[in-house]
Length: 47
Image (cartoon, rainbow, N blue to C red):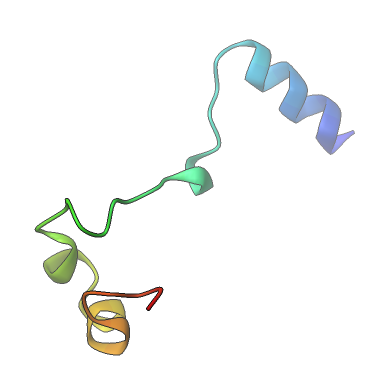
C-alpha cells in the first residue's frame, strides 16, 4: 500500500524531501548550516 501511495504521489510531481543533495565544495554555508557534521568530517567528508 505504501509503494502504491508513493507511486501516485510521484505521478503528481511529488519529490521525496529526503533525497536532497548538497555539493559540499560549492556550498559555502554548509559549515554554518551543519556545524556538527562540519566539525566531525571537515572540508573533505569522503576523504
